Amino acid sequence: MMKNWIAATALCLVAVFQVSAYAASLPDFTELAEKHGAEVVNISVTQNMRAEAAPMPYPGMPDDEQMQEFFKRFGIPSLPTPPNGAPPPEYKSQSLGSGFIISSDGYILTNAHVVSDADEVIVKLSDKREFKAKIIGADKRTDVALVKIEATDLPKVTTGDPAKLKVGAWVAAIGSPFGLENTMTAGIVSAKGRALPQENFVPFIQTDVAINPGNSGGPLFNLNGEVVGINSQIYSRSGGSMGLSFAIPIDVAIDIANQLKAAGRVTRGWLGIAIQEMSKDLAESFGMKNTNGALVAGVEKNGPADKGGLEAGDVIIKFDGKPIAVSADLPRAVGATKPGRIVAVDVLRKGNLKVLNIGVGEMPSESNEAAQNNKPTVKPEVDRIGLVLKELTAQQKKRLNGKNGLLVMDAQGAVAQAGVRRGDVILGLNNTAVQSLEQFNKQLAGFAAGKTLALLVQRGDSTLYVPVKIPVAK
Image 1 (cartoon, rainbow, N blue to C red):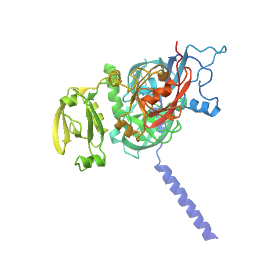
Image 2: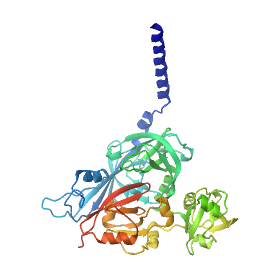
Image 3: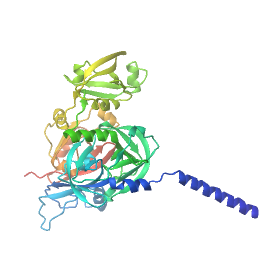
Image 4: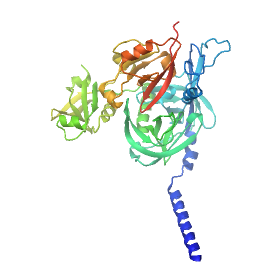
């Protein structure tokens, strides 16, 4: 009996020591929270909107508790119904996000989608002080925005080097998920340099940190308390965290912020080409030994690449001395190049290596680009809910695993108020999959004014339904 008791005691002690050693190896985030929580802010955005009518909490949707709760969980505002049943002429839509202070005189970084189309932006500090903020500028291509409040001696973040961040490293986020201010969540870096559909200029940091609506624009910290990224997107089937979140590297964000502060806009290099990923079969057909490089699928006439001698079928393997391992590397390298520079571009053309000297142009602004590309197959004008749509290219369909969809070139009116924005892809309308622009327009024409539709929207790696009410003609 004594021997058994001694053996059992020894096993318990070993287990205790093992648990203690494991606990000691885990990171302690308490100091990070205490020192850096005050550098994070809550951002409240108000939009003044107009509505035609609101007979139900979510007009046109079935009077079903589960369906109504589904739309509530996405934070889609419901419209108050006046006692006399008359349609409310105006209402305010409110949303929440996060941000962090980058200078003691009140400059704050957040996501562009947090403050997009805002009529009023209120910044709330951890000490409960509130300030009305001015939007200095926003860049939708990287989803970075810079806002300013009139305050001094504010606690500011210290930025780190995302290049030194390793996969598996511990990181933490502080933000306001679902409006719960100064919430900290933690996890590890899952991947680096992640490319997402429709997001060509950001090498995202992927983490498994719990990120939810309201965390957008908040900082991602390393264990040294340095900000290494801005939490921007999640992949989710439910609308909540599924352990797949994506942050914009802080060096990319700071470069954007500096340009917004200096000029109110962002300048990027541009070649005027369409590219696609090299596959094993394509590489074999081009006589290549590997799949490195970006295949030029098209060259814009009289664009910088055309003037520099680049041709469709060329494979770009180096740009300005930087190797192009995958096609996603090229837009980042070109975008980071100052317009007007002459850059050496190494290409494989019919198996032979050529070096072209190309003068990099300036990328058209988003409004100009939308105008240039605004050539829908059937209807060039804005449709009845405010969409300007374009059918997907073969390359874009490939990114969606062969799905059909319609690229949103512009969103205004009812559909913009509902939250659809440029760069989204429309996959379905009222549970009917999109096959073509012509089919979508015919289906849309069959609904009566005042009816609320459910659009299935792809944004990055996430999909969500967005209810949109067809405006009543005045």
